[in-house]
Every structure is written in structure tokens, then in C-alpha cells.
Image (tube, rainbow, N blue to C red):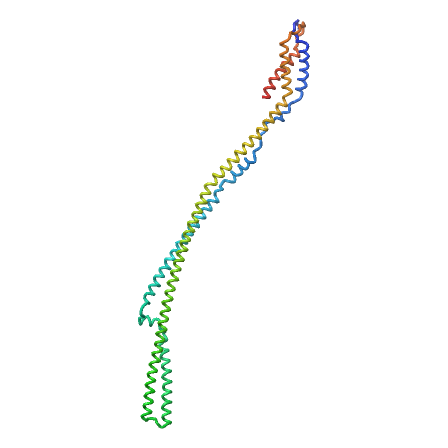
Length: 337
């Protein structure tokens, strides 16, 4: 049902602006906004962060080799200590042998006793003496028979002179036999004394050798004790390294992580700025139209309008467009922010 109404229309230039605005709004809103250009983007993990994660993973149990090395050093130290104790024990036994040897030498010094001489006398001396004297007696008998035969050939056998000759021969032969036996026994005695002196020298040399060996063994024992202490020190050093490695690795991981995170944050800030710039560029035409529509709406309230009488109420397209523009301006402003 038609109703007679009175409308106040805007000034003509404002109406023209509104129509132009409506055309631009229709054309602009017909083009969809590509939101993929300013979709949220996360900066990739930095290489230093990856390195920190790798180091953290590989560092688990990294101290184990140092602990193992320390344990091996402790075992080696124990072995060296045991070997040192053995060396020192051997040295003690050797030095004890020196004392025994020197004690035996002391019993051999001074004038030899008959028992000591007999101990170094050849067991075959008497047999040699008996054999030598038997040969001497055989030769003496032959010589005596030769004298008798010579006296018999001269016809002097049984004479006083022949008896004297035989007596002198027998007497001298007795002396020679006694001298020969004494010489043989003296040679045996001298040989026994020489053997005794050689035995003393041998024992003394053995004592000195044993003393030197004992000192050498004692020196080796001390060296092995030193080696054992050195190995123990190395083991303690390895243990110290094992306790320091995790802390050093944590410091490296922390440094790498912090620097990597700062670089990732910088790249993220660049991506965010690029995203905001793309968003602003995408909505700039709509935002510009929104400002345009707000301006036209403001002009409508500042100029006197034209009166028109009519009977059909209808929605004013300019008012509708301006209202839409004002709404869009608010919406686009919110979207931009």
C-alpha cells in the first residue's frame, strides 16, 4: 500500500560520490582476498639448535670412556704394586743369601784346619802317591839289581866295598823316596789351599753378585711402586676428566641453543613482518574504500539536502552502500589489526 512520504535527498555531488563509491565497492569486493600470502609461518629450526640437539644426544654417556680408562689405570696400578712387592720380597731373599754366603766365608778365613784342607784335597791323592812310589820302588829295585850285576861281573860281589856301595844306594834311595812322597803330599796340600782360596774368592764374588742382585731387585721394586703411583695418578686424572665432560658439554649445548634460538627468533620476526606487510597490502583497497565510505557519510550530515515527495517507500541505495562501506571500514580495520 502506497504511503505518501517526504524524503530528504543528499546534495547532487554527494549522491554522485555515493554512486561512484558503490561501483568501486562492488568491483573491489568481487575480487577474493588471497589469504595464503599472509598465512602464519614458523621459522625453521636453526642449524645451531640442531647441532645442540645432536650434541646432547651424542653426549649421553660420553664420560664412560674416561671412567673405563680410570678403572684400567687402577688395575694397572694394582698390578705394578703387586709386582713391586714381589720384587722387594725377592730382594730380601737375595740379601738374606748374601748374609749366608758371607757367614760361610768368615768360617774359611784364617789358618786352615785339617778338616778344611781335607775338604779341598783330591780324593785320589793317596792313590797317586801309592802309584808313584810303587813305580819308584820298581825302578830302585832295577837299579839295585844293576849294581849287583855290575859287582858280580867285576868279581866284587860280597866285598866290603860292594856292600858300602849297596848301602849308600839304598840309603839314598830311601831319602829320594821320602822326598818324592813329601813332594807329592806338598803338591796336594798346595792344590788344596789353592782350591780353598778359589772357593773363598768364588763365595765372596757370589756374595757381591747376590748383593748387587738384591739391590737391583730392590731398585726395580721401588720403580714399580713409582709406576703404580703414576698409574693411580693417571686414573684419578681420568676420573676428574669424566666429571668435567658433562658440565662442559652442557655449557656447549646451552651456548649453541641460545645463539640458535636468537637466530631463529630473528628469522621469525622477519617472517612476521613480511606477513603483516602482505596482509596490509591485501586489505589496502578495502580499507581505502572504507575510509571513502566514511567520508561520504560524513558529508551527508554537513550539507542541506533536497526535499522530495513520493508515495513508495524504498530503501535508498546510497544509504545502503554508505552503511555497508562504514561497516566494511570497521571490519577491515579490525582485520588489519
